[in-house]
Image (cartoon, rainbow, N blue to C red):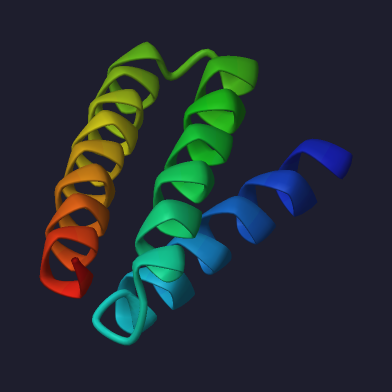
Length: 77
């Protein structure tokens, strides 16, 4: 039961932060963290392909966040 709640919370926050990511780079970073959380849930239930895909999504989100943050800093300078 606790595992299912963790999985539901992970995927729900992932969808929420994905929907909000255009508002702030912080949401993009939170999306990446939620992807890692979902990957952890997938690993707990033994769904290794899902864990791998979510891990890749977290890396993609981090790279996007990093580039966006760097671009915003360049614009401010």
